[in-house]
Length: 272
Image 1 (tube, rainbow, N blue to C red):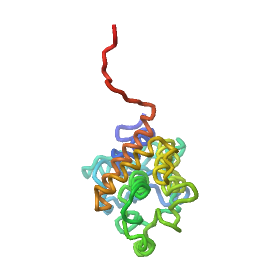
Image 2: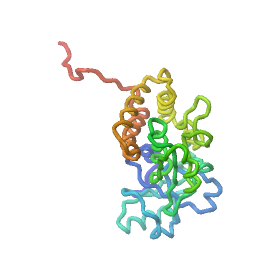
Image 3: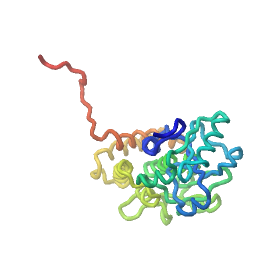
Image 4: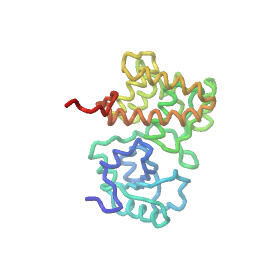
């Protein structure tokens, strides 16, 4: 059984990808990280002896992981608690997560971190579907502090170069449509995030984004909501914040509620 200040890999797997996910600090040694440079989804690399110099973190509890859940992560979690921040460590560490067959982020194609430790991503302005779905995926599974830039289509490449950002959902870049796949599909595959709920969500996104509504019955609803949001918000970042809730709900449905139905009235008394 995990210690009082530990969290199991099963429990962490249930909250990653949701708004309740903790801030995750990966304090593995450089040697351990070089041996397997993948990341638990949403985690940020940190030095357990430099916690006082960490860039500003999002509010909320912190989860610390090291290679096997010993001195690095337990010491860092204790240090954070001593400073008044709720903190736990991952029981069994990175090894336990990997041995459980849980998803790990491939870091090969991630953009470099900025001075505050954030990844930067850039795409075309006036998003509809893929350009909301992809930032949701990035924020929930890759980097909760990611900076998303929306610019004129002709300026995406230049802005990406200027800010060392990863361009997405535009022609001739790595994270974009490939054949019948949309940018969301490509991100899932190349980041190593093939899990059943995300795969189910990807079909809906692909269907809505590529005018193939026959692929998923939910696609027409996502298209309608996405077009409605694009007309409600003139500011792309405000639209993204509203869209985050839409994809949070779709993800939880895809993970936990696909077998549930609803009818009316739900509390009709049984006939005697």
